[in-house]
Image: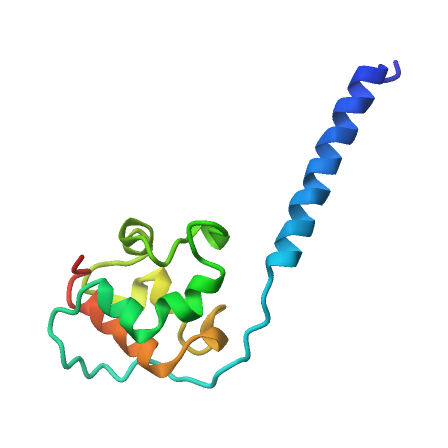
Length: 130
């Protein structure tokens, strides 16, 4: 049994919505030059860095281009404490998703800096202070 005109129209509308969504994602993509960085040094000068220290280290500049309240790529808003802490294990950077994606061989590592890696490591190690 064939599709009715209404069913065909609905299907075409859904396909058009998908194409529009993908086109927006592509147009929002910004090229960021890769930076060579290593794992965090582990030298935390601030024993309890706060969440705002991530922004001071460049998280909003680097990560915030794609991971913000408007784009929300990867279900992540780097400026939102709840969003970032939900992918972090307090006191354990090595098992925290946010840290694993920025270290060498991590999916986002080419978009970060050594200072940001160190700050995220220390923030997690220090207990995810708000």
